[in-house]
Image 1: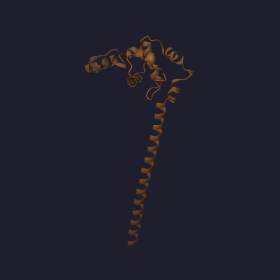
Image 2: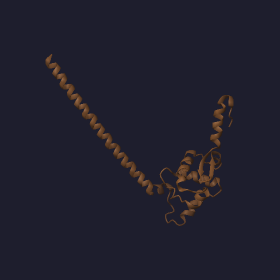
Image 3: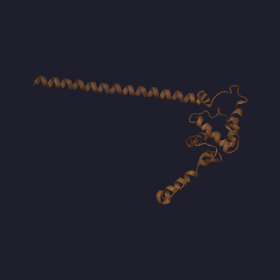
Length: 175
């Protein structure tokens, strides 16, 4: 990339270079930059960031540890989708750990339902069901609050209108 200082400025160039060399995916001690993931045709940097955040809860030492110990079923948690899983597969390829399909075959060997997509796993996970129930409850609470607030506004309006109408009739009677 041609970074021309007289046009962009030194500060902008420094920030661009820092960002391009910074890790977008961190799993344990392994760090992946945009260039590392781009070499295996992965350009999902937002998914890489989400994966970095979510994978911390598993307390893994490295990408190899993830490959050995975590199944796709373990990763079917809120906040991680199929794109994040594909990004993880790209990280496996970047570290030459094989591909996502070989990892899936390894974990599905003991699983009787091996024709299940990640989306199906996710929709059946307990965490996802709990999150879905929470969203429904939040929506119901929001609807109840909105309806109550609307009723209060209507009542206030009707009281004002009845008072105003009564005052207008009184004024005309005196006239």
